[in-house]
Image (cartoon, rainbow, N blue to C red; front, side, top):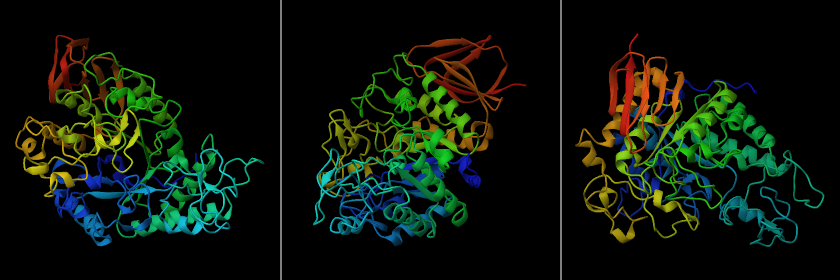
Length: 529
């Protein structure tokens, strides 16, 4: 394993919070969230207890893929504000002990990026992957004077930056090696972009499609070398900064140089089975290629935590203390926790698990109040990926209070980036839940605080799984028993050890050597002795 500088000490205790900036808070009434709006709502994040915010891309873009088609890496998109606004966000967040991470789109740009416009008219430019003539499968016809076609990385409007090919092929002369001029220029450009923002006080990056750089790289060896090179540079130039991977295979990404990787609904040899086996209940975002499965956090009680636990154990053994695995509640690409048949009364058990397992928790904006995935929305900035896969349902405006547009914006409802959940009488809001000590929001606040003051519940504490079923029972740090029952039926399990104070919970009792967990019950107990 390559030797890197140890991760910054702050990362081990991080609680991430992801903000989709166009949907969080609109300060100027144009219907789209912005950076000043985020600044205005920082006190909510501070009270909640999160300390690291990841922003989806906020750079100049034509927004054919919601900002993941970058046209200028060094300037904030005007709809979000300015570079000065981002600097002010970093400063104001820092005053509250909150770090800000940006989203680095490393594998492609927009067709509107000046690099691509130049490349489309210059056959000697190899910043992108071009054929000299013809249009092989998967390539897109040249929009400029340059003949041939280019390779996209996701949508056709996102041409792949050229980091080379791991293997050559005599019939495909466009396959340049990883040390060719174009790939070397792109590696240098990544340093320049990262250095620019880190020098202004940002704390790191979540890297989009991090595994996609080098093409025809079946074991990701060459892609790993790119990130290893960048990590060694980062360790010297910005030792307190971090890189989080959108890779979904910590066993590969962390040895390659990332400080952390997310369990995702895709990635790795099981195509994201670990995360899907927890949350994905067939509602919201569903890929046609996924085999149907019963997820563990479902009222039916037909799922199992085994796929997740086994994947976490494999990743932890491979990483061997050199980095971290992060467990998200959701993100901008897949369904919220409150989705399909899952109801709000099932969410406390899910958060109890997420905030007591030895992964770095990542809370998607609005999940802390139980915002629901909103089905049936139109395609918005490339949100639709298939007949049952519309990402817009996870991107609706944050619900702050009971005022028009749920306090997100003063714009007319028909000008909002996406519609607010129309279930006005019962949709959750921050204001209503702050006023209710029994709310999900208060529970998440207490769980984060408990995790912070109890190191055994954090990423470094040991975990011993006692029962991988219903109920899910495990011990953290040898001192704290966690019981989670995500199904609707009451269940029991024998447990003989003496149990002391219940630190958090509802619907779980331990009497006469038996754990009894009512439907959707959860509990955290301090062990005696």
